[in-house]
Image (tube, rainbow, N blue to C red; front, side):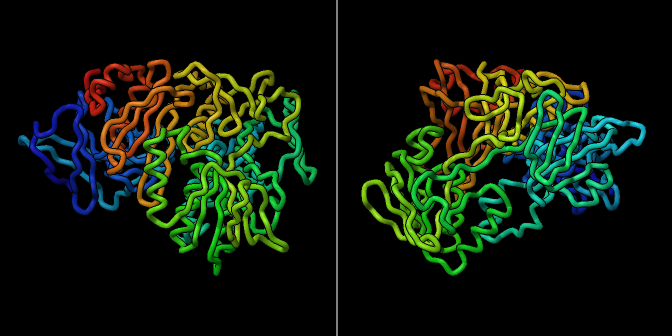
Length: 525
């Protein structure tokens, strides 16, 4: 169907407009040299792209910062794995016409190759989380035709892990709705999935040993094993009914334990702890959050945002015991309560721990690991001191180009970004990593995004109204903006792009104009 959508000149260069061609929502974009038309929603989750950030030909989704090239529809940045089809645009008789072919879809697979029997190489990916899953697809997309094996301690196909603390835990999503791809996808592209626990990696020889005795001697190996949730070293910490949440299986166990139960204690006011608390309240369970800090997430977001998040939970019935430690988790066959360090006792039918994770690297031999167990890598995720070994995701300490520090980040999207970067490096197409960290947290209906690495921030500038859930906060270190967080998605997208191109506004500009529209700075380039 060919349809006139706007008049020529109605859209300025650098602008976008949502239109419809027949029943297809279409995004019309005008760049310096042409009009471009694509489906109007992100392929990761169906968010309207017209609300996103356009910088040149690069379009970023407003919610989770997937990025696309508006000329080709190619997916440039995760969490989007699929690209967008493009539609023909013509300028005729003073109007702009878009043609959407009959039966056109709203997504397309990025070009991927498969197994080449003449390529005798073997690449092994240890781990099937965000980094491992994206690395496997990237290898096939980059022309690697050798044997490709993905080893996972979970039996599930790679899945959308952030759903575990929300959709899965509330029962809104079933576990079979979470996988990123179906079995046919992996078979078609020659990606072998193996369920098993790796118990040994000799970094010098790259030899891998699994718990069942199976062995591999790959030409290249990517360590993408993520993190292992911490337990609580107190009496009763290993009782039945004490859970951590990291996987589909963990979420299903917690959901099963919650059926017919009235009370729960969440230990830890971390992102995962608070997301679990929100989900449990949605299930009608009386929930108490216990944590040693005085405000939830104060170290990350600051006191004003931390207080807002606490009130948000309290308004929905969550109780907080902050500034408190846990002395004991009590019970015989299972949990029946939690004793705090100050003597208070809380009733609980089960407990969920949200007290951090440690890198899952205990199987690595022949490398000097970082103090926390992470693997040190260079700017292409090559393990330092081990030829042919890469590491990405929660397990990797990498040089952050924006702070000049070595960091390890435990979030889904950057794990995916790193998996892509490591895979390109594995096939000799790598370049120094310049991915901008981004994560989001969903607290009931409130979504807060975070861009950058603000650890160590010493000053804070806030624009907007935190109490009205309409704000952006900038985190400064030594007078330099290092991160931004808030509910203003387009502002966060613009901040991410400004970080990427090295044009983040100065601290003085932000203090003078905390309501500055960052898209103006992008448009000036």
